[in-house]
Image 1 (cartoon, rainbow, N blue to C red):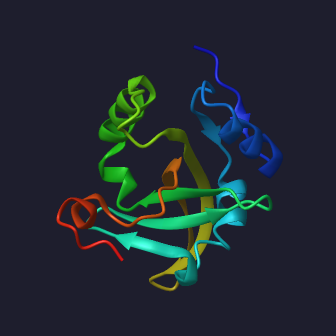
Image 2: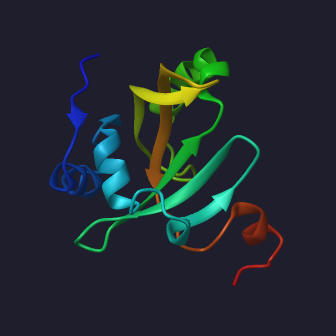
Length: 143
């Protein structure tokens, strides 16, 4: 299965307009751009393994970007989740748009020495649903 990488807002906008478009790899720079560098103002949810941000495109379209934490510990689970999310297509399940698996070398100081370490970023991108969380919807606590 050959998937292209989505790197621009226009490519993402086009994909969101096509209900039959398959989820694709997304660039970290695009996800940073649409979430205002994962700013706290864009944060819409938080859990034990991830923080979810609102990503806004210039045409008003919105996506939910789930930024996973402790990614080095859960690499196999991340790959398995991607496989499962790509296969799921149902009107009652939020649409999976894409994913990002990026590693960058970062230089920092540790015990008085400069060291370089790979920093992994693992993100999932979904269609944004505006009416809060499912548990609040089911229990009637919608805003």
